[in-house]
Length: 609
Image (cartoon, rainbow, N blue to C red; front, side):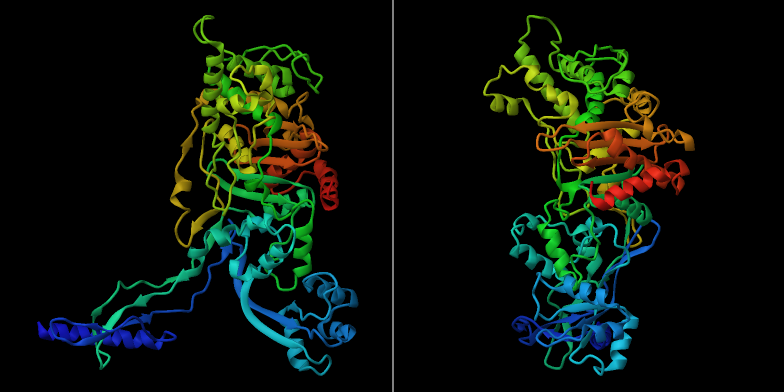
């Protein structure tokens, strides 16, 4: 027994010697010495670091292209209080005079902050020129080298996010501006959400050692060293960059996902900005401009901004009305403009398919009225109680779509949106005797309903799947493993699949001749798109444009939601962006027929209208 114990001690001592040699510092005294009550011998608790050189994991897109990695970065610190020969500096670095002035201006913490030392990012080749010159051409230059997160693409800023430690200058700027309080709702993207997995953690041993350094058991549980893990994102970097070109400097969002898995293929929050902006040491002026911009480009719109969805919500109302037996696919309603205005001139909507094709507001006014005012058994029943019960039932079905709650996307913050309750209307109307006429805006996706971009895209995915979905997510693999477990659990709505199937002919008809989005058809390249347009009334300016859809209609591989603020009609502004993202994903290129269309949209995106 004594021989075995001695062998164990010698082995542990040898292990500690090896670990000590590869750790810095090797041996850390901790709490007060511990006395063995049986022998009276005193032992010192120590903590030995197994490894303390942690490499942060990379971010890769769905095709394994590296998007973010920790790499050496070269910084040139300029003299703050001394005259600088910008012409000589430009010649040394191979920059023209305009580039030198622009780079310095972007690095200043605020306009006119001259006399402040700034840092400029250099390439390895530029840094080598500074080294070889050794201050002969431009004196008082300081070349620094450090390891920092490097972005290989300007696209995907709200997805990739930033490491908090590297974004401290941005946080200080945000606190100094009048939008500092607003941007406390900051979005660190997957960098912040998965920070613990990306960073990893060192391992520790906790031996009790005697005066000779011999181990005598442990005083705490040992921990295993874990290197930072790579994250394999669901994003397609090329599709993301393409979608950002379509939205550019306009206000709005685009979310594209694979309905079969819930994987987000593209996630655009516009106006867009380069991903490295918030952490780059020489982008202080650009950050200040973003913080002050009236269009709030730093707002993570798809997750944080909830808006009335407009006519795209007619799909949800129709599915619920079918489930509650308020209508059938063959229900016909007259386009009675005394009920609500209808901006589309169309033939009578004698079926649900035609109602969706023409997006007839009076049709869906009466669909929702049939649902809310329905008295199931007899006229003797209390219609007030029935109205409250029907609205509660409608809301129960709608919430099963993931509405009025967070979907749980892997980003730091997400808004739940809103669906009104009967109690809400009792309080807002100051009576229980409100009528359908006072809440009819629900029928066309206006009024109190608010949905986020993620919920809009997920709604399209649910219809594409005929009633189920996987929660939308941005990471498909963590190291050698798959996504987080909750993203692999299928969720079902409370609406039967047959009722979703009844929506498809109408959504396909929307994209065909006579439909509200017939100009956005992809029939010429053999792709049948199912979609729904929306134009959201806005009392404070131009209407907002919305579109949701998926393709191919009968074997969906991509679902898209687009929302453009103050852009007008969904058919002319939002639908073209959505279908071109679909075509780009499914075919890899845009057909010549739409090239002029594509250029016009990108031109508008660059100019922000």
